[in-house]
Amino acid sequence: MKKALLNSRSALALGHDVVAAAVAWYGAYLLRFNFELPPEHQAVMLQTLWLALPLQAAAFISFGLYRGTWRFASVLDLKRILLTVTVSAVVLVALLFMLSTTFRVPRSVLILDPILLILMMGGSRFVYRAIKEHQLYGAHLRRGEPVVIFGAGAAAMSLVKDLAQSAQWRVVGLLDDDETMHGREILGVKVQGSIASLPKVAARFSVGHVIIAMPSAHHQERRKALELANQLGLEVLTVPSIDDLMSGRLNISQIRRVDVEDLLGRDAVDLDNSGLQGLIQGHAVLVSGAGGSIGSELCRQVIKFKPSTLICLDISEFALYQLEQALAGTSTRLVYVVGDVKNAARLNHLLAKHQPKVVFHAAAYKHVPLMENENVSEAFNNNVLGTYTLANACKDAGVDKFVLVSTDKAVNPTNVMGASKRIAEIYVQSLYKKLQAEGNDVTKFITTRFGNVLGSNGSVIPLFVSQLKEGKPLTVTDPNMTRFLMSLEDSVDLVLYAFTHGQQGDIFVTRYLGKGEHIHTPCKVR
Image (tube, rainbow, N blue to C red; front, top):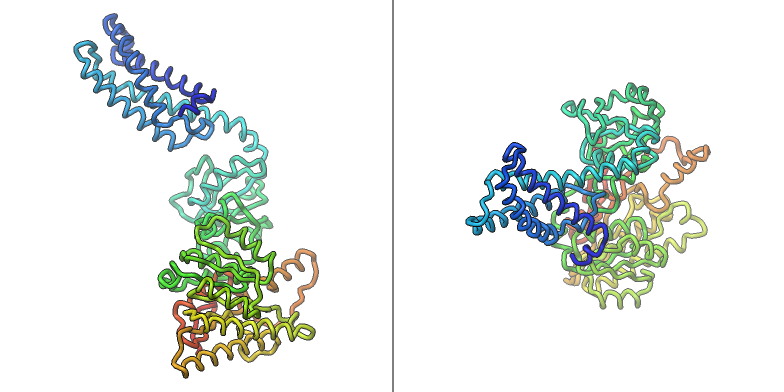
């Protein structure tokens, strides 16, 4: 605390609190005697004041009241003041009790003094903060662009608080279907009504933007709100997903435009991955193709289950660099390896050194048009020979489980990418059968297939979005084609589900359950 006292602002704050303590002590006496203080009690008041002030000043310093700044005074500061004043009051009462023959202080004074002191110390801090915020942000409240927020929960409250400090936005109202919230205020912003009342509210306040702040709401609710805003020609923004907020990757104030994932048409798949903790925690895990879209998301989710080591293998140096930046700060030991899954010597050394219990093989060439014609040999080399080399290396190293990330295009393949992945599947199955025949099936080989993944590298969706922005026609192969899309998180959930529940030689695919239900759930076919 000595360093804090050398700071002029901390010394000024301490001086304020000491003056407040003196005023509170004098004020308690005035209230006790109805503002007519008898001379004999005035003398006692002055004598005991010199006992109370050093004691309270020492308590203020000891309890760290000057670690924060008044500009950002909060409930935590108020709690600290309450504790400090209470403790100092108890000690003061004990001292006065021991000195009762010398000083006779009225009991009501001992009760009134801490109350007055808490009000003065806490009140001055919050008044100072209010003045500062008005000076800094008061003008913004009148100049910002009017915006309506969908939602009146915790996310909306955090958003209102953050946007109050923004010169760009001015929150004019909240809309929520919870009728118990209608007419109430959140941080000074009124809940104007239900989401259906948007046309009236938008016209009243000349609103051009809407922010959807319902990260944990069902997809149907978010989609309904989005469609209503689009009908009125309003620009729609949204807050990060609840997973991003809980993981700490994003802040509530990082509003963004609505992505295609927000329009997926269903809620996320909820799979039973309860056994993952026991299978991964404390063990080494290797992910090939770790710099890719599927591989990087696999790494993020595997880290949640606390492996002892996560080995991230990719042939792309830049992709590994990006992954390293994204995973910085985690407590798990991370090993970034630039290497080729077709390099047997490199793989054998890597597996012998780190001895992973589990290997997720996500390295592959998967862009269908590019793998045709001029790149057939590369598709075969990477997807088939790469799987062959890594699978054999895992078998020789005694890896417990090898999970091949495959594709639905391997079912009756009509293109090079699908055919190469199907050959990889067949080899993995034949390898397990060979091991079974030899009575040496230590390594379990499992395959999981899924379809079109939103946000994956080479996905057609970013191309469509780009074409729409530029006013170009969509390059649709066949207008009668139906695509069943899944999010990146869902696809990795399915890989982890297959890893948890798969047995030797199993192949998992995703199946369509019907409109309005989860499109993708795991189904074992082998």
